[in-house]
Structure formats: structure tokens, C-alpha cells
Image 1 (cartoon, rainbow, N blue to C red):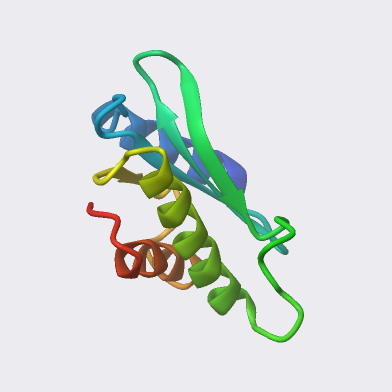
Image 2 (cartoon, rainbow, N blue to C red):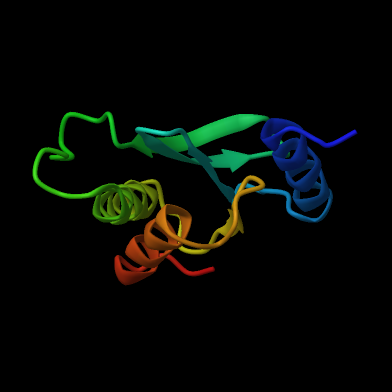
Length: 118
């Protein structure tokens, strides 16, 4: 029986999460991508706390005149700025079962351009 897209992504996500964990010094940058929006959050898995989050639904991100990949880049820059305000410089990137391609890659590049290291 063939796996659904969600089942496949869940298996990949669990495989990734076995190796990637976030700490207070080096939190996990988790990405969730829906058809319309993209979300990113910095997670400290040791304490079970979300340090900061950014998404394409935030008021300060203008999504009206750009495509979804460019919106993802803006979200990456926003999460990097919030991380630096929270005192975080390096993160572990968790692509959440998605391919490192398209919007996920744009988000990562936007975060790197704004000074986040991973």
C-alpha cells in the first residue's frame, strides 16, 4: 500500500528528529510549510520551550506583492532578527520532513543572510 504525502513526511520528520535536538545555546529552527503560509520557530527541546517564532502571517511581513519563495526569505530574515534579540547566534536547522528546496531553502538562506549560523 502506498503512503500518503503526510505519512511520508511524518516518517522523514521522525527520522530527522532522532538526530536533531535543540538546546538553549543552539536551539532547533523548525519549519512548517502549508500550501499558503510558512512558519518558523526556535525551540529549546531540553526545556520544552519555544524561544521565538515568525511566520508569513505576521503583521510586519508584507506578502502582497511577492511570491511564496520571497515571502519565505522574509520570514527567514524575521526569525534571524528575533533570534539575535533573544541572544541566539547558532541554530540546528530542522526542515521538518520537507525537501531542502524551494520555500524551505529560501527561508534558510534568508536566515543566513541576516546573520544566523547553521
